[in-house]
Amino acid sequence: MAVCSRMLINTILLEFHDNIYSRNLSEYRKMERIKTCAWWPSWRKDVIEYCHSCDRCQNSNKATGKRFGLIIHIQEPSTPLEVVHMDWVTSLPSGGEKCYNACLVIVDRYRKTPIFLPCHEDDTAMDTALLICNRVISHTGLFIIRNRDPKFTSDLWTNLHKLLGTKLSFSTSYHPQDYVLAARMIRTLEDMIRGFCAYGLEFKDSYGFTHDWCTLIPALQLSYKTSIHASTGNTPAMLEKGCNPKIPVDTLKKYLVDINLAASSFELFIDKVGHHANKIINDAFEYAKQKWDKIHKTPELKAGDLILVSTLNFNNIKSPKKLKYFFERPFIIKALHGTNAVQVEFSGELENKYPTFPVSLVKHYTSSDKELFPLRNETPSEVQPLDQIEEKKVLKVLKERRLREKMKENTWSGTEIHNMKMNGL
Image (cartoon, rainbow, N blue to C red; front, side, top):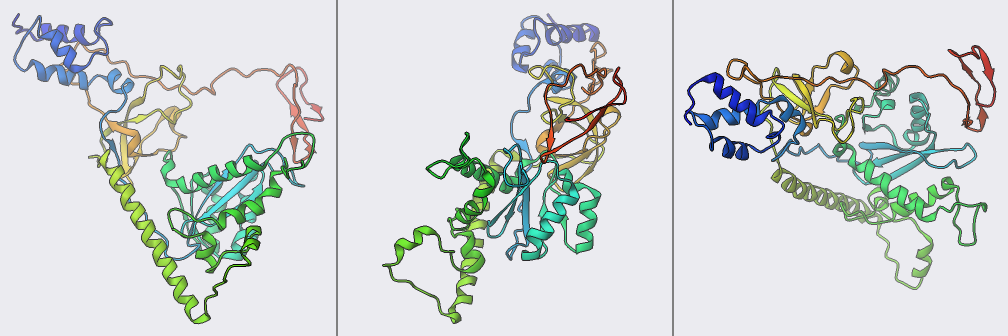
């Protein structure tokens, strides 16, 4: 049947796309259905445009094809402790005299040397700054920190770095590839602790396993520093001092010939080791870039464009996790940060959310032509935070909370026991 009426064409598109009996079919299947009952000039173009400009399809369908964002070579440090990565291991059992339940992990990007500092999960930015100044900077000097933890993005930490004369480099939000070095070190540390930690009534068993993980940190740190790193081809200790510290297994080597470098050749040895490590790191980056760029592409975005943002990191959307949209309503690009990050313009309930996203979490938005498709019913989704719920009254306290072995005193208000102090909480 040849169709000439535009109203009839829109009705056909509506029935073959928006109707529940033909919903979520591919463009090819829709065209195969439509051509069995109707035809009009440029019908294929209209079907493709109608499908691409559908709000529900753009929000609910996953992004296919090559993802946005080619890999960028971050300037590698040329000297030890020039750039470090930081992150925390949390949810650890209480250990040590001060009941530590977290560990701050610091990794030198040049030598891959780790520093493990036991701490508390509720440490403030000031606590973290003092810990690093007293335990790290006093031995290593100033360096550049790459992270986006709230403790580092706070005004206190930023001002402290300004006073010290060092630089704080923020990584992109929602982009774990930026701090993969610290994340990989955390995974290694957790594996090492898990292998030597025991849980039970005994503080230490006959095999030397203990449930106080703080006592394991010095030995584990030495173990890692004397192990060869794949990306440098040397141990972190060798890149740091030109030799490996003695460990118990070295007592078995007393019958071997010991080769000591002369003082005149020590500087040359350190220089060659550093150049060799840099070459291996650059080769590893080129290999990773080649693999990454095969499945990624450069986005064609500019300020003012409309894009959809992935809901992967949106935890305040009021909808079942299985059925929530993969992308959220169109947002305007406010600015571009390089080629791999965009800043969008949030409003309403999303104003407090960090507005910068990597391009791998966005995709182009295709607007619908209301004059061409007047029958389309656009129903934009609404984002409602979960924290907008009724305040509930406390009926019974089931568990007590201790803060560094000190009993905390809380005051409950808004109930019948208003202004009654409850000790032991």
